[in-house]
Length: 120
Image (tube, rainbow, N blue to C red):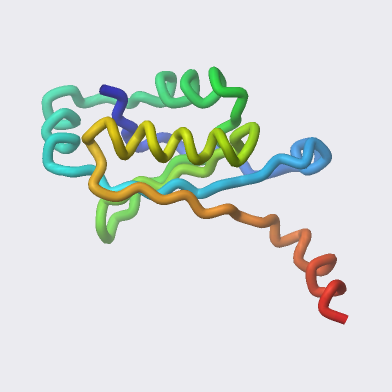
């Protein structure tokens, strides 16, 4: 079972990443009782496992956060394509440790002026 524990915050998108046309997604998950029990019994930072799994599919992980309000995970990923996002959702929801898992595509705020220009 691969569970994600809090990681240090790692940078933001830079101009070279933007040039690669990366798409960013925020994955949000709610660990269930069995996930919390696993984390209690196996404390530690699993950054290498998460980073390795993301890199194995050809993605990047610019950030990982844990909410203090509801202890949800918030992970920022740049996967290779939307199909990979769906496969990740299916894999994580079918594996049992999460009660809820969503992916939201994020747009760089620097791109907003170009989007606004399309309104005219």
